[in-house]
Image 1 (tube, rainbow, N blue to C red):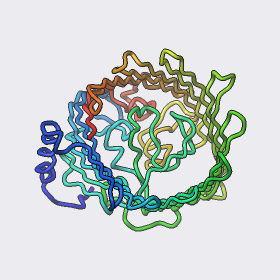
Image 2: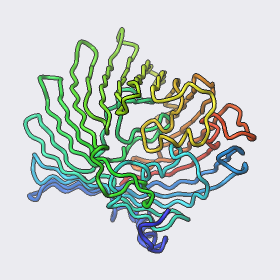
Image 3: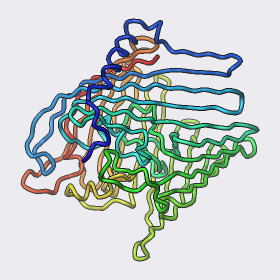
Image 4: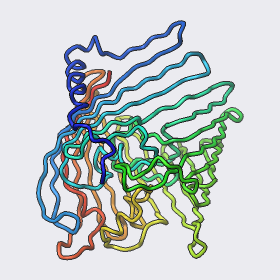
Length: 424
């Protein structure tokens, strides 16, 4: 794959590493900055993430041989929010990423998923080298107008339409994977969004997201040329009835007609209930409409124990036990690329071990082949603006080394990651 830029891979690090050192050793100089005066409100911030990972993959049709690999990565996100007055605001997030990963692994389990594959223009994206990977990008760049219960936002922005947590068929634009624990920043897409309050608790939303032509000549796999058939227009209305919030969605998602619903609330003041689903009418006349839905139950106890259970019926998936690499990557770039199966279950748990230490765990299983993954996440707060995170994951079910067919989770390596996060 060709690089769009031939600059030296270490050129951005000449600025990145001194900045990292300054953030740690002179925090008063580069600390979080806020100004509110005659020229408006300005908020500057940054997030630094430094991680080290150990991964072990089994021999199968994707990896030629089993083995372990160590890798390190660092990312710096600068954020800007500016409001010259009460009705206009501007947001910009710029990201610099460095990683020396030398082994291909599923995109859902690596930090690069935030910078590769999201359908948006590569205009701001630069990859300086591929070994090690050094990337710069603009993740958000938008302007908003807010007045009288109305908000209009134009530009690169995160769009979250999910009601459920782990599996979210209605989250159409850059959705999180089920085993993503760190969800502070959702990748932005190029779109126009309009929100209008209706009554006391209702809201109407209209979203138009740009679509782009697929390109093998760019690292993101998307070109700067627009593709009208991949553009999406989604209308959504939500309101509250009793103790439940409901929503209805519809429109054109890329070149397919889309209808969806969402529901969330509480039964008996104890059991949390979440559900969402969709019907997609495929453009080809010989293909039937596809239905997908998720139902989730959960409860949080007073001792901070939080349990979630979700069932996902994936109309886009196949009710088969084994998959080839081509089966898994055939839908690359879609919200369902990592869920090739028909039915999935996810059981998640969160618990505050101490005021500074929070633990999460997730068991995800394909109901049809009983393969799955187990993931753990420990987050310890070092201070108000710094934390250390330890994450581990492993998959279960056999891998057939003599065949190209395996379960989808056989291609996931066992992984252990330690990450330091600092916020300024």
